[in-house]
Amino acid sequence: MSPGRHRTRTNIRTAGVAAAVGVLVIAAGGYFGYRQLASPGCSGQVELAVAVATELAPAVDAAATEWANEGAVVDGSCVEVSVTAAEPVEIAATVAAKHGAILAGVGQVNGAAVSPDVWVPDSSAWLLRLRSGGATAFDPGNGASIARSPVVLGVPEPIASQLGWPAQELTWSALVGQVNSAKPLKAGTVNPTRDAAGLSGLLALSAAAAAGQDGQAATVGALRALSTSSANLRQELLSKFPTAADSTTLARSLGAAALSEEDLLSYNARKPAVPLAALYPEPAANPLDYPYAVLPGIGPAKASAAQMLFDVLTTASFKDRLALSSLRAPDGTWGAGFSAPAGAPSPAADGGNAAGDLDPLAVERAVSSWSIATQSGRMLCVIDVSGSMREPVASANGVSRQQVTLDAAGRGLHLFDDSWQIGLWEFSTNLGSGRDYRRLVEIGPLSSQRSELEQALAQIQPTRGDTGLFDTVLAAYEAVQEDWDEGQVNSIVLFTDGKNDDDNGISQQQLIAELERIKDPERPVQVVLIGIGADVSKAELESITEVTGGGSFITEDPTKIGDIFLKAIALREPDA
Image (cartoon, rainbow, N blue to C red; front, side, top):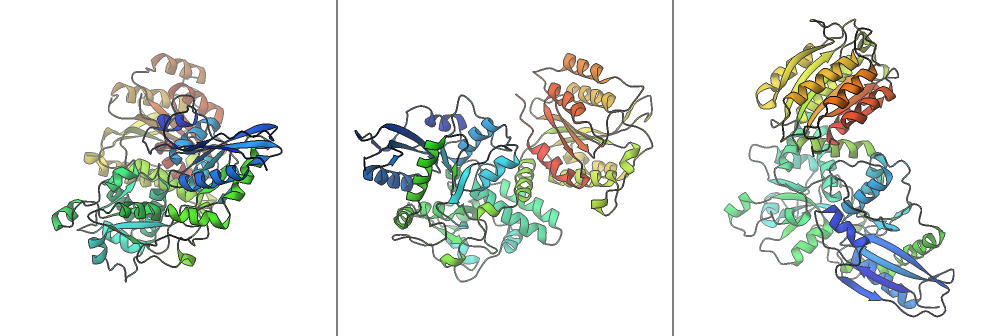
């Protein structure tokens, strides 16, 4: 068999999406190795670009090199494999841009980034988030796991000993109590919108908090506790762990964080002054599962080459290559040379469910809640109080659309911290002084008017009026624009269950023309419109947000508006 060709490029972990993804397009950076072997027996060449999570790239590179040396040929053509180490968030941003998806916290790709033929991120959660984020046509092939790393709680050994490690098992519920106590354990995380291990830890902690007494308060408390010691990069988070074992340093430093087992083993391999203990809280968090995703549209020759490479990466010998990188095989077992952390459970019980079994709604809620709890903004909330909001919602035990909407707004309000500025209006038709809207609370800091907002929400009642949508949108836009704050994302979030039906108000054409006239690129105001029920006109709402920016979200099931509200707020883009 004729030898194939193989080359591998590496890329250091970086916060910049464009710079990191650019390594796929330009020949730059260090190489694991490069081979371009003469192959007179080949009738052609198939070039396969493979982007792999950084920690897994050496093992994939070594296996691809061996395959090339033994002869990598598909249908008479030599296969040239280019293995690039890349952070999953960077490739996710590229794929999202290509497929029209929006991922909270990921940001946009700058420049002409090119997606690979095969992508091996660290978690199937990335594939799930892309589909949930709007990439409905994104349907990668294969998706089977080629490696595994449990998500553990990394705790400095002196602190872990106080928690009963390694003899005593820890639960996520107990951890919720620790981080929300009067003398809290100082916990942190890598931004879970950008890091799969951080997301897995957040999901486990949030589920435990929600299941306990006063679940919403416990969940918000846990989010705030994690955010105080969060980081966008893993290395940044790891640098927050103690550098000395004295009590003062331990008290000031990071005391716990969700990490992959591989991250923890790599950290301890550098012989830090204070090693990290690996705690495996119950129930087990979703592990990193490293799915082998063949991206759509690569053509049959590359697809065949991709399948052949996958076969190489699922051989028994590959398990030993994984062990050299402190990674396990997909079933949780490990190869020769793997050194399991003290207290690690048996391989049969190492990592809970596969990441591919994650609930999309749970992931979306966690990501959205994190984004809201850790950002600030200036927002005017406008709620429809027209007569149709009295309609009962069968899926919500018969409570009205109005109450479902108010409950969603109230839950969202609990997530906003005191750095937010929030105002509240209601609208219908003829609410006094010739207006279709009523100002209930002017936009102001939550630090001083949270209780006033809560009281105003509790007093909102549906009227017998119609839906004065257009007049209200224009008035709200002018109000937010007038006192525009340069340091915040300035936005309007409006809930409605109907089309504009105000015979005495402005027309749709007049509204659009006026918004076009007054909008100012230097003072942008994003408008988020949330439509409830079958009577909402999607075209009507989209005609507004096409001018203002923001977005429209519509559901015929009113019980879903709470999740839509969180998602809509989380996806707001910072003002340019």
